[in-house]
Image (tube, rainbow, N blue to C red; front, side, top):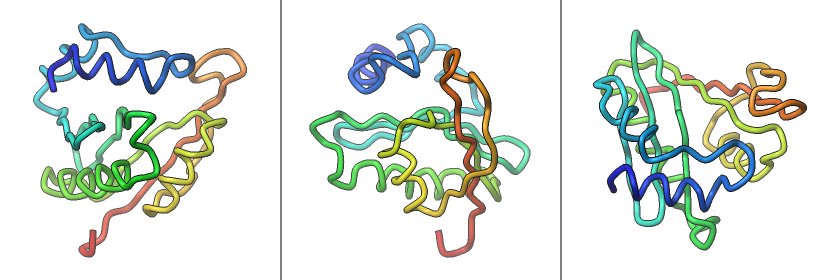
Length: 137
C-alpha cells in the first residue's frame, strides 16, 4: 500500500471524526524511521516505537471486512513489531463514541488509561488506552 492507498482506505473508515488523513500526511509519517506500517488484506495499522514505548497511530479496516479478524490480526502484528523494536508497552487514543474499536482493543488486552478532552473536536473526547506487552504476545 502506498500513501494514496492508505489515504483512500482511511477516508472510507473515518469519513467524519476523527478526520481522515491525507496522502501527504501518510507520506510524511512513512518517511520517519520510527514509524512502521503493517498491512493485511483490507486493512492497515500505522505505529511508532521509541524509547521503550510504542504508539498505535491509526488502525483502519475496510467497512466490509470488519468483524472478520483483520483488526485482531493487525493488533497481534503490532505487538510483535513493537516488541521487536524494544517496546515494553503501547498507547493509543480512540474516540469515546467508537464502541466497536474500544471493544476490539479491550479484547486484545488494552486498558483505559485516561481521557483527552476535546481531542478530536469540541465535545469529542479520546479515550487513552494502554497495553503492556508480555513474552506471550
